[in-house]
Image (cartoon, helix red, strand yellow):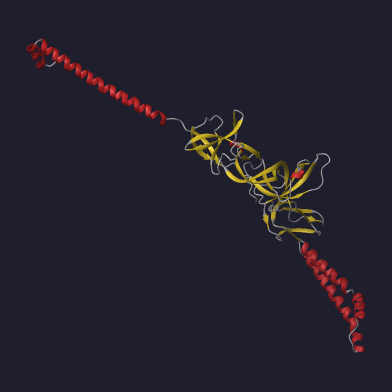
Length: 389
């Protein structure tokens, strides 16, 4: 206690002590009041901040759409090329040059292998000489009669002279020699890729021996097996979606070009030909999973099949509105595994979801109604939109 206050207390006696104690008490009360007010303010701020710290669960969404629901039949098939040419030697000879290697892309008419041309050139020259000799004999046969009689030989006389001179057969031999010279160069029958080359330069080959193989990678088809009870559902012109384990995550579109009439008596399955619009990574010989269009339901309200769950035995979807997941009971119709049709409510006659609504497709299995959510990734897995290629 300061000396001034002590002196005043001694001078004032008991009254001064009482006043001093009263002032100290008021000061302590004021201090405690300020501390309490600050504590109350902090508690209030903490209470206000509590809702702001509520967790928004990350979810994946997709939009409700209006479109065609494509029902399909799933099966397997093998990829084949329309052009798989095994090229063989058509004439005997010695290989002069191999102009391509396996894996080379070639154009139609491009030279692949060439036989030694010298023997073929000589054969052509020999045939041309034979033709020239035959023409001389032909002229010798018809000229004397023309000079003596003073008139041109008749058609019959020309025919007899042509046969006797051997001109016709000489011309045929010349054409054959020229053809064999052309065949001495092996060319690509279509645009494609060289699959293999079986011969080397300097080898002697006979007619009929395999030389090389070319595959057309642009014209591809799939031969798919379809069980007999599903075969009537497939129609020509329908869309086909093709996937393969060798190229995961990629899909190729095609079109059904033929439903073959015969059923295999052992497998009880028929065959369907699918023409691929753009083969992409598919190669001949691959096995592929094929989804064939069997029926198209036009202009339906569609949600992703992954969005549909059940609560208390009733199907529903979660629709994101203002950052919260609100469940909406639906009346589901037919589904193709990717999309599910939403039918009008039996009571109100209206469809409870609108085109463009964001429905949750991942992260919704344990959600509650009106739970705060956060859209993180738009789902892109729905590739079969019913759009014709």
